[in-house]
Image (cartoon, rainbow, N blue to C red; front, side):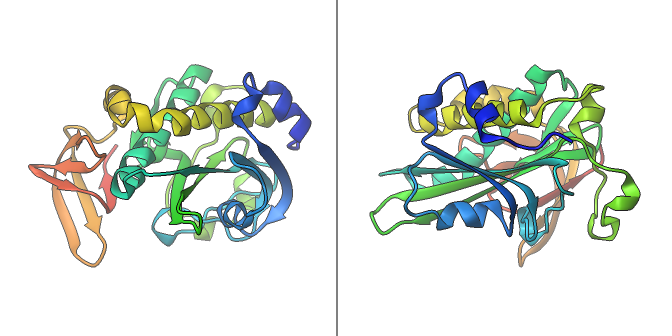
Length: 261
């Protein structure tokens, strides 16, 4: 078991100026909630926890990760004068592509993305992202991106399997060898901060080609569950310039995708 250490993460960052403050927590309710609550700490801000008691995923689901078995990482950033719809949709996609790029560079060649930001390996979930934002008192958009990733999970019988509704995999299984969680955390922090910093200038267009390469649903029949509206079934044709999913000839900005991989 390798515990997270701030000194090791700082040492692994090639550009330490990107990050202003880093906290390592033993246990916390939610790293995203904790990041939002830190009003007196410099931004960009990052926090990691060995364990979350109330970790959150997409669509109100719980994110489960046994102690010191994965990464529970949140990054806090802020923007001025950035259009909110563009921020919430396109940035979400850009960060998912960023995480997939990091994993691909590590050797996870079969990693793919399920819209909008589930990281999948051979049909099993490896990681997920949760982007949250709010308009702060000083007229800035505060962004917190939460990344949950399975790194080296314990035996199945030690996990609360009744709360897990889909197949999962960990990074050590994908790579076929162990990996330092501190090194992985540093890589994700650095690359995601690059994306957050450059996004207003680059926009989503800089990520569209890679999204297409990672897209698991392109050209396949999908079922999209739309909140309060029911289900839509059709063929997925990628995303538009704002990150909306195109099913047949209609674009959708929210929903949950089901597909057969």
